[in-house]
Image 1 (tube, one colour):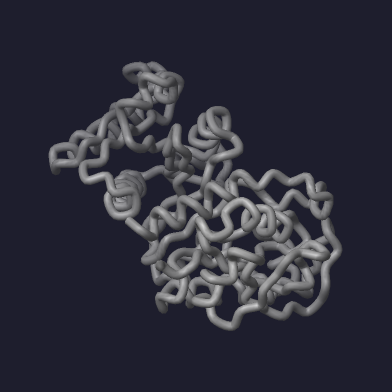
Image 2 (cartoon, one colour; image 1 turned 30 degrees about the vertical axis):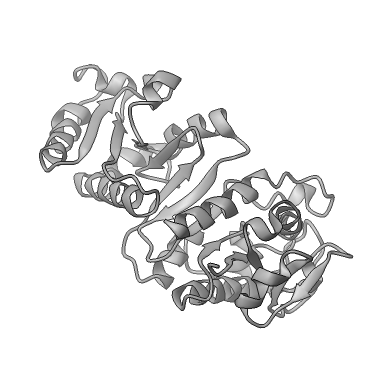
Length: 320
């Protein structure tokens, strides 16, 4: 049997610990996992088996949540991040990556972090999870994909102001995004000849230059050049007609030009089941497509669906 998926604790004051327990209760031995974190942060009375090797988690998960313990500075109050625990959160991510790099875990699934707490408590120097994982994996460039059964979509630019998108979106960036996406579809999703659709930057994909010239000046020529090299890539397509049911049958993944152009359609189509996948890493990494939800942490109200889907997808990708 394959090694378990390494599930990081994320921000211990958020919903990550309670969702880990709920996910284990649903998956148990169908998708073995090992949770890495401080057992004190899990819901009181949670059935837990402490392990010192991920290999023990496969057998243990039938009866209890397997936990690879990692001592944090303090216990936690749900909803109130403690910067004193920031170093522990970072160390857990590093530990999970080390486990998958050495073959002791099959994949990494990360619970959401609280970036301000990490900055305040440990001087965290990365914009987010993805950039930190790229550094741990020795990668210069990775791609964020949001995936569900109904849609796979990749934003070429991510967490920047809309006004900055035309400056950040360069031919080199778009070319590399398409390349990494195609490679990820082949290697991680088992799609031998991936079909990629690319959205336009401007409304109506520029409408022949009437609403912007980027599509005419360089996006369309770049896509034609990539297609001539043998990749099935189409566009630029008007974004407002790219995500309806019939359109989605014509591609395996869509590349959007900015954050909301990508995330609005997938969250509208499949809000609870969207999974964040990092392509371009030398290991499999998934994450639920939600945040720490501090406002409901500790109440038992959080929906585990996205985490369950993230764990299942991590297992499938690692088996591919």
